[in-house]
Image 1 (cartoon, rainbow, N blue to C red):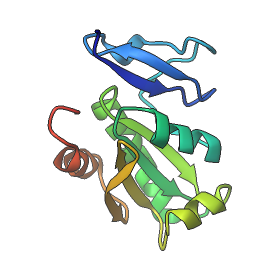
Image 2: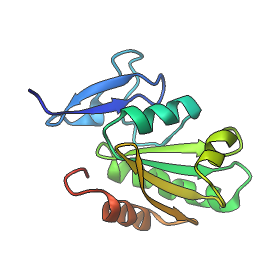
Image 3: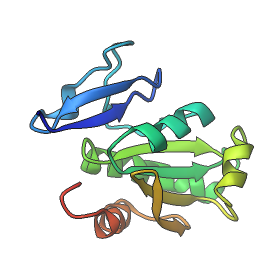
Image 4: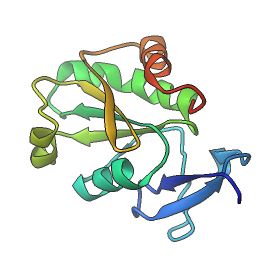
Amino acid sequence: MTQENLVVCTKCGVVNRLPLGRNGTDAKCGKCGALLFSGLPQDIDAANFDRQIGRGSLPVLVDVWAPWCGPCKAMAPAYEAAAKALEPHIRLVKLNSDKEQAIAARLDIRGIPTMILFHRRLEIARISGAMGTSQIVSWVRGHVPTGTS
């Protein structure tokens, strides 16, 4: 039996099988053809959030943000750079707390930006406040279970 990761497409939400030995940087969704890892964190809606957390096998880092938030805007380039460093071993996504208020409430978001790291459906770490690229990468690698990053 081949070892594989289940990777949820951020565009259409379909679950794709990606063999562990395959370089995921050029992998495309079997349904919509979008790159599974673009090097840029994608904004997702509530349904895609639930699929990322519930169906994917990769650790998922969620940046909860809002368009009016100055620190969120300031951190955006660092989060994008972190995606380039961490993908394809970690899925990085963005969740707009204004558009997805029900998810933000379910996650008990008290301040933004807040980053939450999930693995196998469970929240394994959370931090609030803007961070630089190296801080984000170090924080994620310090919390991801061995062998998954």
